Length: 568
Image (cartoon, rainbow, N blue to C red; front, side, top):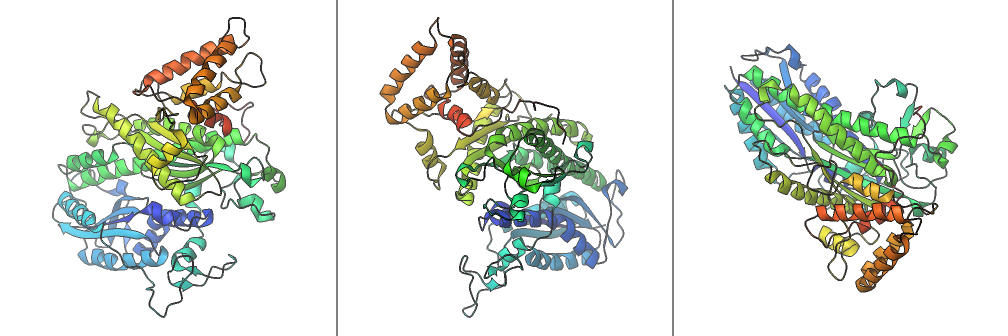
């Protein structure tokens, strides 16, 4: 019995979501991506008269024994799916229909798709993966074609179509039209745990714009900053990616290839679905942390909405699937949000990996993740900032790989790390240039200890230590250090490194004197400073800019608890 396998993968998803640069088009694009393997895929299967057979209805071992009209999806999430059927004609019909549906539903989205068959399911999957890899870098044709007589949309140069009703635009290209016309909310809903009774009766509103508009819709759809002054609107762009998954996926397929078709499907489905659920639950726990802290805050947005059951949230999800998370979070909540996500991700993956008996010999005990985070003003170029966040993530991954290379294990796993950067200057195309501009001094010092680890046993400075360092400061208390001293020290390091050393010695003498009220605070600060710096391989790296960023952005401590019990 032959297995006909069709696999689809959207590629360059981030480019598709970010093109256009406006949060409303990014929201539309991310919801379209989410809908491809949900609403659109269900529609395609129904049009062809096929029926989806659930994984739990398949035999545990042996062959699948599907009926002619039955298909099975061991993987369908994050704009990726694998479809299997015994019916060759059904597979061919689907392969003809699906690209047309996707091109109309998500114009401008690049994707790879391949089909093959074999008596052995593992061999069919191997053939398809080989075809997909060959396709990924091939050029793709997009419709409508822009002929010489085509009216062009001025912003993109692509064929112009009518703008969606109510958008107040003179025109759009086909891609923008689709993004602005979306009617889905499935991605945003994945961040809220609907089973949580504390959410009952609450309406959580995820922002769709940054712009300040004095209309009723503005207060419900805009990012709820602390003030309505655009000059004080800082956000964090977060890009989080799982560690080592590519390597372990190869091991998974190698391990499954030795099993029967039914065991192959069960093993692959349990892993892919388990990973999706683990990532989603981690995102829900991070969102819950944010809600617990934010719901106590008074902002103009809550006052104007005048409905205690409506809560505009200071975050916007863009990608959530597999081991990936991309979102926008208000700057002061960003580190707490990602700390909660990382802790939950490690715990959730630990729990689901325990149940994968067929793969226990190839999988690690848990999965970890790495985050790149960049703090910008809400009016700065988003796509450029996101590219920098991706590069920060890649840089942190390299540091994690160095650590895992030293592990004496046949299942190495890099630690969860985070590299964050607060940009106070113009954004550049290249990360090295940006880091030189923000962090490097004339005497070759670097004013950051990034990337930070989340766990104390890792061979990196720990994020919690940075917040312990911050706790030594309070400008309103006589026995605590004044944050202005660190800001001044950072400025001197940039302008005159020689004078910065003199400034440090004077500051130490002033606040560290035995008779000074700040003596205890200075002792704690100095011990932590040395401990963190010693963790870094390069003695010329200092946590100055990291600490200044916490003060400048008023970043919440990830381990802080709400003052009163949450009444969400």
